[in-house]
Length: 162
Length: 286
Ligand SMILES: Cc1cc2nc3c(=O)[nH]c(=O)nc-3n(C[C@H](O)[C@H](O)[C@H](O)COP(=O)(O)OP(=O)(O)OC[C@H]3O[C@@H](n4cnc5c(N)ncnc54)[C@H](O)[C@@H]3O)c2cc1C
Image (cartoon, rainbow over all chains, first blue to last red; front, side, top):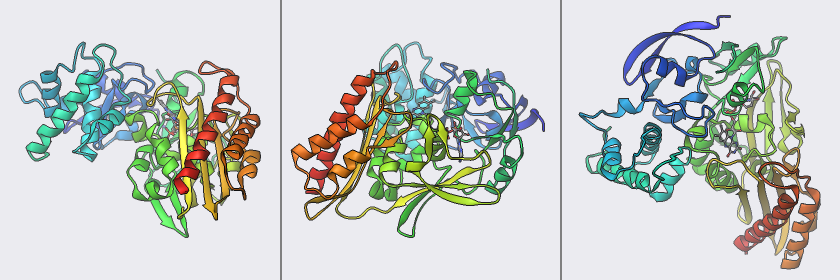
C-alpha cells in the first residue's frame, strides 16, 4: 500500500498534478502548489481561514485529506475573481470595508459563496449561521454581514451568475 | 502535521467493509472533523485508515416503513436542508443549527457524531429522544441497536472494529407529539456543549405519553433520565409535576467539573432546562 501518489487536482478550473503523501491535508497541498490565498490559521477547524469550495460546498481544507478530493472541483477565493474582475462578494467586501488585516477574508468569502450556492436570498440569520465557523479578530462581523447582504442583492440583480 | 498512515479510499461500502474485516482493523475516517483533529494532536495514531469520503450510496435520507432513515454519510448540513427531517425531527434540526460552523457541518457526518462516542455529541440527545436505532453492518452481518444502548462508557460503544454505522432511523412523528433540543454553550456557533437536553413527548387526553428526556455532556455517555420520564408518563403535567421531574433528572445525571463548567452548574442547568423544555413541549401541544 502506497503512502505517496501522484494525483490530479482540479483547482480553480485548471488541472494540476502533484505527488503527495497520504497524510497531506488539502491546505498543505494547495499552499505547497502556490495557492497561498488559502490561509492557514488554527489547523483544527475552528477558524475557517482555510475554507475552500469542494464541488460548491465550503470545507475546512485543514481537515480534508488531499487524496480524498481527487477529481473534485476545488475553488479558492482566487478562483472566484481577481482585482481586474472581482466577484460581487469581493467587490462588496472592498466597498463596505469588511476586511482589515485580511487574513480571514478568503475564508469568509468562500463560506459566503457556499451559502449563496444553496440560498441566493439569505436573511441576516442565514448569513450569521453560514459564517459562524469563520473567526475575524480585527474588524468584527457587522461589515462582513453587510457586505454579504449587498453581494447577494447584486448577484440577484444580475441574474445569479457566478 | 499529521503523522503518516496507509490510506485507502474505497468507492463502495462493500469494499470498505472488506477492508475493515482485516485482522489489523484499520480506522474508518468519515468527515475527519473529530479524527483528524485528534490525530494532529497526537491523541490517536492509526497505522491504516480507510476513508469513507468517496463511498457511493451512504449519504441519503429516506422515509420507509413508518420511519425516517438517514445514511451514515449524511452530513449535518444535509439535515438542515431536508423537509422530512424538519417534520419528523425538529429537535435534530435544532441541534444541527447550533452545531459547529458551516465548513464543519458540510463535512461532519451523522455516523461520525454517534460513532465517536463523545457525551457532548449534539446530534445524540435528540436522536436518543426520538428513539433512534443504529444499524451496524459488517462484511458478514447487519444488526440494529437502540441508540440508548449504543454507548457503554466514556467514548466506548458496542461497535466492533469491523462494523460501520450504515444507517440511523427513528419512528415518524405524528400529531400530538413534540420534540425539542437546547444546547447550553458559551456561544450559539462553534462551541462545545456545556449541557445538552432533548425532550420528546406526546400528549393524549391531557396526559403525557412516550416521554423521553436525553441529557448530553452531563455523564460519561449521553443518557436518558428514565426516572424523570417515568414520573411524567401517564400523568397530567402541571407545573409542580414538571418541576419535580426536572429535579429528578438533575439527580439522575452524573456530571464532572471541567474547563467549561462545574458539575454543580451542569446539574443546575439540567434542572432548569428539563423544566423549560418539558413545559414548552406541553404548551406547544395544548
Ligand atoms: C471546529 C469544530 C467544531 C465542532 N463542533 C461540534 C458541535 O457543535 N457539536 C458536535 O456534536 N460536534 C462538534 N464537533 C465534532 C465533530 O464535528 C462531530 O462529532 C462530527 O459529527 C464527526 O463526524 P465526522 O464525519 O467528521 O467523523 P470523523 O472525525 O471522520 O470520525 C469520528 C469517529 O467516528 C468513526 N466513524 C466515522 N464514520 C463512521 C461510520 N460510518 N461507522 C463507524 N464509525 C465511523 C471514526 O472512526 C472516528 O472514530 C466539532 C468539530 C470541530 C473540528
